[in-house]
Image (cartoon, rainbow, N blue to C red; front, side):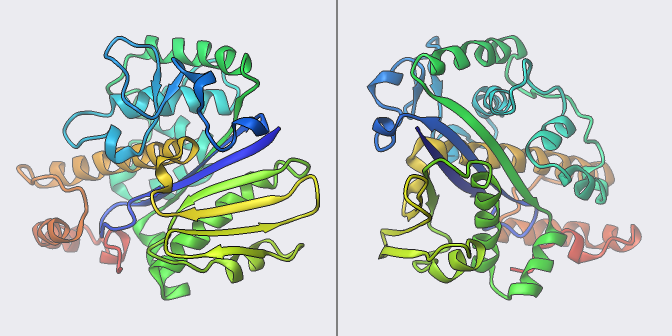
Length: 323
């Protein structure tokens, strides 16, 4: 058996809202690693959108699954049952705080420090049907077990604007902050499987091609071997025989199913945060148009709330990311 890990982020580019990074880990036969999900998973998992009434679970890059204004249902249909399965729960979560406590312990406390994230008790799911999600959470483990496959971890890291700005002050580099956040999450996941071979798939971080020094710092017990560094793929290995670790940074890596589920999870958490963020400021300033947080529109949004921030004694560093 091999542990297959996928890592991705949502919110790297915006000035408003959090940076979310997620990792999923799967235990599966070595023969399935390079083609997962192969023909054995037909009708269960797919990277292509299935027919409307099909029971197949669609897991793909969040940019394909989620469209602004179309609701969160398709993200919830994958993320919430998979979160329950990864954490061996019989039922899906019932609230935003419960999901945060499951996927990112400690995140709820940091988020609640900002007034726009105070309503963590808001119910989930938002748009999907709970009965359908609970049926998926019940059926999928049996279907995967028949193929000797399990999802064994789903974890996230959320950096608020204040967290992000603190990271920039520390590293003075946005790409470095993303790489460190992602690889510290990887370490948290794979440390749980000390006797299993592990393969990790990551999307490239801001065009970066060289990761050996950072990997050696985070995984100091063995020499990190470079097995290629190029614009398309950077690959590294370390560890003893029988439980080797390999990590691949690839352009378009989010098309790989474990990475795609990480992309969907990170996007879902960020969208929940942005919905709360927009709702708070719209209560303060009725008629304010919501924002997705990306640079041009973020400036429009900040200009609209600048006076309110002064009245509410909210420092810009709490909500505006400096890079």
